[in-house]
Length: 356
Image 1 (cartoon, rainbow, N blue to C red):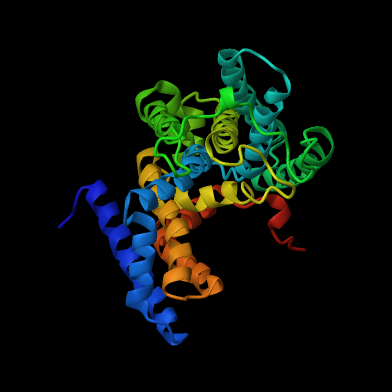
Image 2 (image 1 turned 135 degrees about the vertical axis):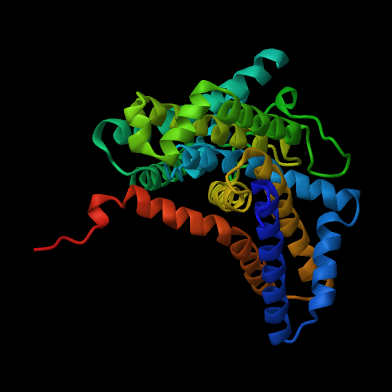
């Protein structure tokens, strides 16, 4: 008996999640801790009350956007992992606007525009190298992530530094900050912007001609080429679109995450959000709507993990292992698809062994 595709995917996700939590419970037990108490603390810390749920949503806000960056690329047959570097520059671009004392409405709009443009512009080198020279996007985006990281270290320490507190950038102007949705929490109206962006990406991919072309190229590049779809245009569109969402993620973090509204040296508050978005995209099956729920779940793991440590006395390292196991098992169905897709499109020539 065959089930509809959506029900089949949901069933796979539920089974994978149950297995992941079961393996996590076994690991907790093997280390001498109580799995039921640990998972109770995890759930209470993630969704137990309004404060916990709000913190989970706050964690999910940038993850939705960085996951969209990867998902757009994946649907177009590209493995774009450049969200990390694009997010850094988007966040710093939003901060930089506060150096100019502009009217509040102008400052807010300009912060968002500069952030998304910074992300999009940083995606262009990888897009152009892919479209014109066939350079594999994994190589170019990793390279650009490193360049972005050290460029941002310099900007934080030398250009955007707060004169009163040298360990961080200037804070974004109060007129630019997104209102807090639930008082006393980190949740701002940025969650609505992230969800709106996911809906826009869904409509783009499934309700427009360019979206059909993107998915056709990702499914079968050769057939898409015979149908008259120009891959170089798809490549540019996919990378720029992904850069826009990654840059927006950076803006959402500095404009909508109290109480800091700034970036510290070493970027501990935003480091890793781009790569975590890749995991969120996998768990959400690279579908914009699935990504929303996957990001909330992932945000809940981050929020609940702290409570697991405090209430159940589970060491932080073990908490991270359990979280990783759950995410890994949830992502397995999509990883199987990914490996099949990589075999279909082939590997970069520099990774292939040369035969004499």
